[in-house]
Amino acid sequence: MMNRIELLAPAGSLDKLKVAVDFGADAVYIGGKEFSLRARANNFSIDDIKEGVIYAHNKGSKVYVTCNVLPHNDEINEGNRLVEYLKELENIGVDAIIASSIYIIDECIKNCKRMEAHISTQASVLNSLACEGYYEMGAKRVVLAREASINDIKNIRNKLNEKNINVGLEVFIHGGMCSSFSGRCMLSNHMVNRDANRGGCAHSCRWNYDLYEFGGSEKLNKDCYFNFASRDLSSVNYIRALIEAGVDSLKIEGRMKSEYYIATIVRSYRKLIDAIYENKDNEKLMNEVNDEINRAENRLTSHGFLDGTITTNEQLYDSNDHPTKEFVGRIKYIDLEKNEVRLTQRNYFAVNDTISFFNRDKQYNYVVKRIYNNKYEEVDAARHAEEEIIIIDEELVNVLKGYKDTILIRLLIDKK
Ligand code: SF4
Image (tube, rainbow, N blue to C red; front, side, top):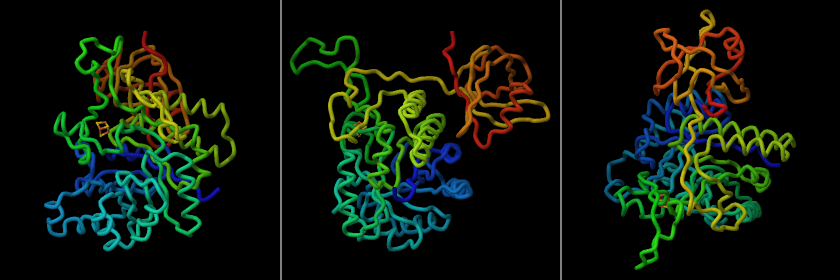
């Protein structure tokens, strides 16, 4: 096997960046306030990026900043703001930008000596000659289009190796897919005037519709809604093949997803990748990892384009989303003197529920006996979002004080 593969996770906020790093990401990608898609996300200010870079670098992880907007002409005439911005990113230690506009890529390569330019999936690269072209420009990595199969990826790497072209290849392994070539769809623009290529996609393909034949009056969808979204991508069974195909980075999609989703998905793939390098991957582990991932998923998943055969099974034509509410909280701090665990509520849980405290590599199941609000009034349930809840229990404190970094909490069994 080649160099150890990178696990790359999304982060839509500083808190999520810390969770991704704490749960095993080798690198995170974030959006700045300028030149980035996901315009509606709570993007990072320069100070946030700086804090994120310090946090990630201290733990041996890298930070990439997306600059993947496709600028209109009036946006490239705003003096040298792009160059200034790229230099600011480089000065605070950002490891790479991810861009698809040749203008942004070129300015990065010309003006930044240390910060790398990575070619975004928005460029839809599906062949070795395109990789070669970007490499010759000075790009260090290409994020392949989600439409590449494992055979495509192997062929691309082999062709590049034949020419000694050492450009990194990054591949999406998990998260949302687009029914169109990534973002090249005007559905959202037409229906709600939100531009998919400016981070504004309203996911109109995922809305629920009724289906009629043109001119017909009979509703064709019977007991469910019709939508035309793709299932989300999940690649647990393909990770070994991707490593052996010579991929450099495995990317998880979802800067808008919750910290619980990021923690669970990163932790699961981390476990699997580490097992593969130790030759300890087997069917039992795959099942465990798939189960774990399904806990965080609220949409059906498929292998996307990875094995090259696309069928109606990769679509969500007749399914409705079923969001889960398993994530119930995050520990704020543990007071060793008072034997208190203080947590922030994220979803409802109650006395007698079984909850599970977990970090990157540990998990502790716990039946909730007594809980208090922050005035030390006993309550029967944690009902209010972001409410501070206190658990006083010496045994629990003794277990959790051995857990490093971020600790999240999920519900293990359904409430009756
Ligand atoms: S509406 Fe659906 S198909 Fe269109 S860009 Fe958004 S996710 Fe892709």
